Every structure is written in C-alpha cells, then in structure tokens.
Image (cartoon, rainbow, N blue to C red):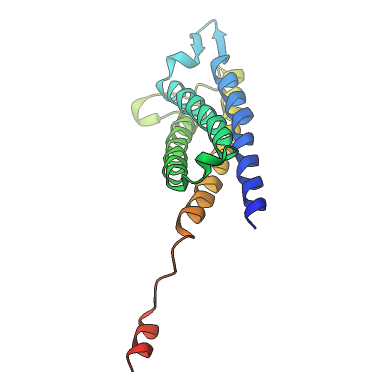
Length: 172
C-alpha cells in the first residue's frame, strides 16, 4: 500500500505544476481591448492577481515537495507535509473562490450596484478566465486529495481511540 500511496502522492504533486503554470499563463496573458470600454487585463482585477500568486506558490511548493519526498532524510517529516498540504488546500480554495466570483460577476453583473455584465463586451477575456477556473479547480482537487493523503500518513501512526464499550468490558 505504501508504494502505491507514494506514487499517487508524487503523481498528484507533479500534476499540480503544469496545471498551475497553465492557469497562470492563461490569466497573465489575458487582455482584451474594446473601443467603447477600453482595455481589460488581469492586473486590473485584484482577485486575479491573488489567484496568480497562490498558483505560483502552489507550483513551487509542489515541486519542492516532490523533491523532498524522494530524499530519504525528509520523508519522515509527515507533520510538515500535513500542515503544508492543509495550508495549500485552503489557500487554493480561497483563490478559486476569488476567481469564481470574478467570473460570476463578469457573466452576470450586479444589478444592485449597477454593475453590468462584462462578457458581452469582453468575450475572449471571459472565456480565458473560465478556462483558468477549470484548471485551477483541478489544482484544488489535487491539493484536496494530497491533504487527505498527508492526513492519513500523519495520523495512521497512532492507535485508534478506544470505545467506551471496550473500556467497560475491561473493568468487569
């Protein structure tokens, strides 16, 4: 079971790298001009900048974690991987939520604050954001599974808790 788990772990970490890089490239190169409304680029939206930063951190972390898992002296640091994987999973959730909010507002607008949908005027920009959202969601899925694997590794060294029935059976 351990070699299979290590292979799954490494495969997921390797998968995070190109998925993150692809989503970063999509967002960073995403810009569109409109004669009526001007230019729209990723640097105009704080949520996209945040997603790019988290994706870059995630790709770097995944690369260093793959290297660490194959070095024997660092493999025993299961708690370090557990905490780091949890942090990356949560950060990826927050950046995916920020990106999803921007995509939602771009397609639907917000009538209460008189913000109309932007995708009617910036269709190419919106299409690239949707594609980046899909890639970022795949990264999120990878980090979620990695967080479960690292939690399993960290807590499998402990004995399961004793039930109250077992305790009562031992006292009589």
